[in-house]
Amino acid sequence: MSSLDLDSLSVSGLNGVWLDEECAKNFKGYRAPSPRSITEIPMIEIANAIKEVIEEEFSLPKDKIPTIAARKLGFSNVGAKITETINAILDMMLKKGDIREVNGMLLFNS
Image (cartoon, rainbow, N blue to C red; front, side, top):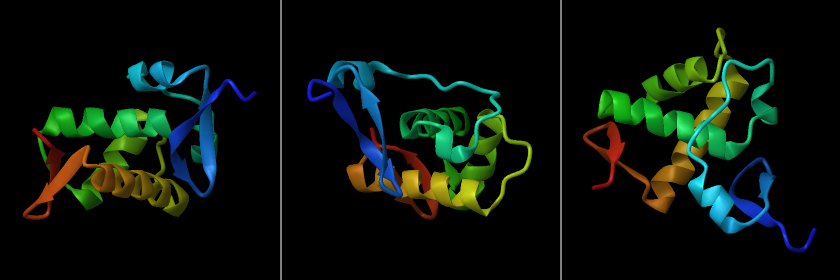
């Protein structure tokens, strides 16, 4: 276990585990639709769905992203836990500098 890499994304103390750091950096997809709950989806998959939403739309208000990303992950109903989890990952992405907020819109840093 000590040779495994702990995912840097963590919500509510939950982290993914990877074979190595390179595997985590190179993972670009997400699995959907899926019968999994939001707590069973690795944070990297949620982040990748968020990235796809922003790429497709170029920029969006933060409050619109959870619903669209949740649909990409296969959720037909977007409840409080799903919204909370996606917003927590959005906040991490903002803090890390992966995305930025300009005039209330989220977009990628260039």
